[in-house]
Image (cartoon, rainbow over all chains, first blue to last red; front, side, top):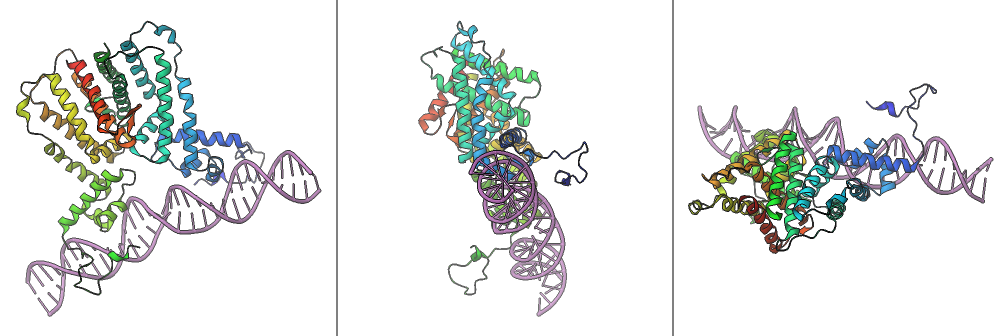
Length: 219
Length: 219
DNA sequence: CCCGCTACTCACCGATTGGTGACAGCGGGG
DNA sequence: CCCCGCTGTCACCAATCGGTGAGTAGCGGG
């Protein structure tokens, strides 16, 4: 069924040349990494394997072994690539933050994180992967992800100190847990605990509830 | 390597008889269902398949097709079996609830749910499955699970009305999302958003934060 | 006692998986 | 010039997957 990609064009010079692969290792490596990220983002970790990545990248799986040392190395490369996540999502309006209270800040961060995750299928898949498996593979990826998240939160927070008397680390973790689960459940099944998560109106309700919870603690 | 289970004991009467299978359809069906639940709870949905279940149940996979109509039917049977979840976890001390405020109640429910999920690997795996896949299979299972959860919450709530002015459905969904994600992340990686979730002390911190959030909204 | 129904097992199928060794083709340095 | 190394392709491996058809073994009713 897919023999057209292997034919050695017996009638050369025509317009529909089979796109002879140029010998460019860098480009191939990039193609593999892009294919891997796209595959993971679109299909999830379930069918994420050497064969599938090679098929999507349009090259032989042998090259994945050669260039990345197998799936593990490729996953690690994805993790390393996650470092750009922080850079890409800093709104740069940190100047308007200096008069916020900690409650204002956390509310803002919660909503920003909610939106960021809603629009980032790759991050969602990695998040789901973390929760479903505990192999060395996913553990390293998870570390890269959480490091990126922590860095992002840190950059966004600036120098604002949390209020005393509350375990803000724990509270924030719980809030982040809620956000992550809402996004995952919404993307997967369109609802969570009876709350529909499909339309933007649904998400507004969830966001409002989230704000209420944050405000209830931080004022 | 596992030929000892098929040998037709040439020296009968000895104590180590190879456990000749009795012809009992009901018992076999039960064995299959138990094997399926145990396998899902212990190994997760990743390696959950016909062959694995049959291997664990100690019977031929053909019987799974015959008795349950394949994996789908078996999964559905697991879902049906989830109805007992509610019955098994109602503490029956509902009598002491009549003087609680809605905030007291939700705090209590949150902590109970947290504990219940922490000690129920099967429910956790199903939860993770829901989030990672969206096939018909998992959708039905998910429905059974959420129905059981909703019923449980309903039974526990009793006739206490939520306060006006807040979208309690949305708030509760967010709280439940947080609980579920905390438990999943804790079971999988031992932490969530930088908060360690290993020792009981860790979990106390998370529970306290959870209480704070609920109290902040419901007073 | 035997026969038939039913519970059960085995052998096989094609497809796909992760993984490896051998080979082809181009290009640059001796 | 030729040869070596690098890039890319192909063929093959054992293992496992879900799925099916045919056959065996035991129990109960005639």
